[in-house]
Structure formats: structure tokens, C-alpha cells
Length: 368
Image (tube, rainbow, N blue to C red; front, top):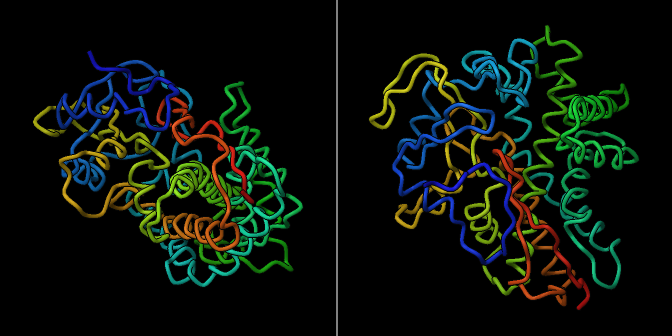
């Protein structure tokens, strides 16, 4: 019997994951019980995964989900976004976002991002600090607010709202989204010049103020979540003696510990044959990013950490630069930094569903 791939779990950082090998052993396309009820199908093989991620017959709009499913994003009709639209609507949004987050544009911000990492780590002072208690969230949010030209006195509001995004209380997520969208609007003030105003000017002229704020919310929340989930694994590897160059360290960390272990839900638009199985219209489909990335039989090449196809993550360059900045600053400015507990004592928590995994704590002595 397969272990539940959606069950929240906590295990040691060196303990093997029992779910990924079991899913791979079950075949390239595995039928499982979905968290919200009914069946779902998980893709465990890379070639099939890349096919799914580019197949226009498999769409992301939550309107296609089974009727009794809850907890998904608003539908594309209710709230157009990069993560819910497909086809021409998605392409139009992507054309507005992608140039602002290109490798060239992001690399030009490298010095600013390194300064932010240095300042936040320096503020933590002496003694043992838990880098998962504040730094892992505050660093990417500080970077994002700075790039969007949102006043940094709103940082605590952003931190609080991002944490409330996972609050199970009814209505809590909606309030958190509204709070982030409201603070994002501060980057649109007439005297502001940053990515927020650039995005506004790049979007179609008929874009409403409500939709613009939601796009900014999505940039902030997704950008925070991606780096927040990866920082702990990156720093723990570095302080456990990994001497790889920063780019290789980041790449390997993201391969082994992708911020999202699964893709967001996709749904078939019609009956299709996939991996030798006939799926009905409306079938929920996921790609097991972490399982494919860590498959021992996988050939070397680009991994699936940031997806593939039309929905490849537009923020991939920023996330990787942030992680390289943390590694560089720790090595150059905090050469005596060390873990305050043995590496094997660190614990990682999978939050359940299709959410990510993060270290439960990361006690570090920055000055040895």
C-alpha cells in the first residue's frame, strides 16, 4: 500500500523520504486519493512530466476542479493570474512579468541583494539564533519590497500576512491576501519607481486596479515562499561542510529540496491517454517534482525545480540569486559561523497537501 503522499510529516534531515521511492515504484502515472476526496494522478517520470507541463489539454484553472474541492485559488474568471490562466491570457500576463525578472535585470540587483543579506544577518548579533524563526522569511520579503519600491516600514506587516496565508481558519487566507495586496499598492505611489510601477505600465491598459494588486500580491507571496523554503536547507548544507561554489550549492540544494514538492493542480480538459492510462475529463493531475529530481536513475540535465513549459517560474532567477547571496555573505562576512546543533539533529517538516517542506528550526552561531 502506498504511503499517503499528502500527509503532513516531520523527520530528521538525514532520514530518507519513504514517499518518493514508493511513488516511482508504482509506475510513471499513479492514481492516489486526493486530499479533498476522489482520485488524483501523480506523474513520477520525467519525460511524461514534461509532456504534461506543456500539454494544452491539461489546464490550471481551479474552475475545472471537482465541485466539492475547497482551498484552491480563485478561478481564472474570478481572478486572472499567472497561476490560473492558460493559453493567450497567460501568455499576455507572462509578457508583462518576464522582462522585469529576467536574468539580466535580476543580476543588475546583485549588489543590493547581497547588502540586504549582510545587513539582516549582522542585525542578529551574537549568540545562538534560529534562522528559520525570522531571517528565512524577512530576507526574501525585504528584497521583494525593495525591488518593488514598497516602503520597508511595511516589512512586519508583510511578514505577518505571509505567515497567515497558511492559517486554516475560515477567511484567514483572504484577509492575508488583502493585506499583502494593500501594502503592495504603496509601491504604486506617484513618487515611487520600482518593479511595481514597471509591472503596472507593462500590463494591458484595461487591467483593473484590483487585478494589478493581485499580481503584486502573487509576486510577493510566491517570491517569499520559494526562498523561505530553501534557505534552511542551503545554510545547513553550507555549515555542514559543503565547499561547492555558490552556484553549484544552490543548484544542488534546489534539486534535492525544491520549494514545492509537487506542481500546482492541473485538470484535464477532456478524456486523454496519459502514460498508457485513460484519464477522464476533469481529472486532477500533479507532477512529483521532488521525486523526479531525486530519481537515482535520472540522467543529468535541467531539473524540474521551477517547472517547465509555459508556466516555468518567472521568479527563478531572483530566487537563485537570493540563495547565492546568502551563501556568499555567510562565507565572506561570517567565516566562523557554525551550526549550534549536530547536523543530523535538524528536523524537516512537510506541511501536507501540495505545500512545501522546511526545516523546523535552524540554530546557528554566526560568530562561532
